[in-house]
Image (cartoon, rainbow, N blue to C red; front, side, top):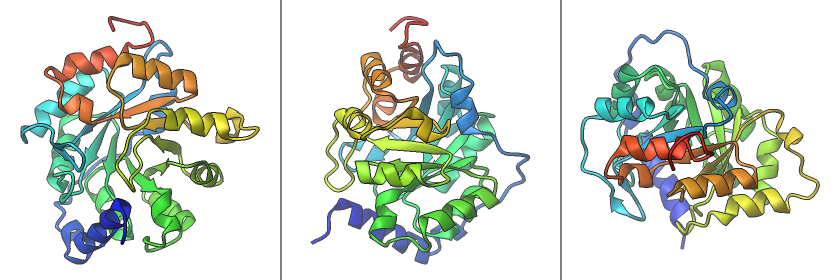
Length: 273
């Protein structure tokens, strides 16, 4: 019996084969924005927050009633997020390709297409919709779910001008990411096999890498993902060695999205927390 990661991959291939990613409204976009640069160049007193737009999650169900993506995207950037992560996976996260298109039209900030990417077709769709970066998951390659090798898929994305955030959850996966040409390395505090969340995953991964030195990342930001609920979580993960933070569910369930993001951005002490 497979675990939840297997279900995600099988559903992703079903979406690809049914033509979901070919139903893209291609528009003209000029240039790409760098999510990596946005993280690196941010004022050091501010926390680099990648704010995620998703209306549901497999573990929590409905997070927020679907509403105007344009206003949500603008509010997030106005509050200080350095970029957006847009869920386009339709089955488990209630994402849509149209959400990405609407967000792209609304803001100039970098946009990450967040999906369970197993096919080159999904990368072409990201390019056509104006995304600046995509998420790839090391575990999907290790299980043989992806159309090509990890290195080939990263090269394919780069050829389209897209940056790659490469997601890991174990020391072995993190080591593989360090050896890749990914632009950013993610540590998912959520185990996609079980959906359990533990912020200490980031801590354990960075502490337990024998002789690990930040120089091994070659100036690539390390992004802690999932389970972040407060400014204190941001401060904890920064102490662990994270350079940026991808935050989704807690933002989408906040009463005031903008105020919550502002407090996360200023978690280092640059504003109220």
